[in-house]
Image (cartoon, rainbow, N blue to C red):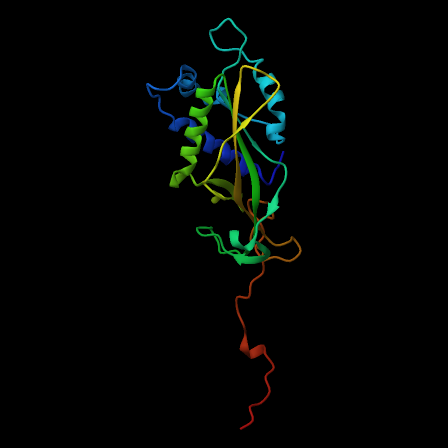
Length: 249
């Protein structure tokens, strides 16, 4: 299903994958934490419903239906990280960058021709939540501390989302509103688990490139999303065809 925000969600998933790859076993970590470090991404980090912390009981119940590999018991891997992007969207304030509501003329570099297209940019904020569910307090604190440390690195202040614009793949950067994040404990009805969460705001930029209509265009392009019609442009003025009044001396 087409989704304007899907590139951001996919890019955030890759960002969390980079976090998982950044983890290094240390001799002072818990056994559960070292097990998390050695696990595959798909059995370590999951996307949760956009209700976020309100659905932790439901998420954990579903997760516990999984079975640990090569083990007889039916208890799922813990710790696990659940991430979610909220359903709401907030338009950006002017301080976060210019929102191009009025289209501007553009030409895509390295295009086979110089057709004239239009660009609009949606800027706004999305709420993101990262939840650590662990079997003990030490593991929960270790994992959430590592994530906070990861976010505060300069090269992790945001991530690129990949968009298909008129047949060309372009990366657009999305940045955390602040790298100062503060974990909070979460209490649920289920016992023998410890939960920590962090809330973040993501400043996003979504580009929209489009061409002219089939009725009025430059004759370049086929009218598909990957090959849009170019807008008509003025290429020549014939001065001899312009009626000009005689010059009065």
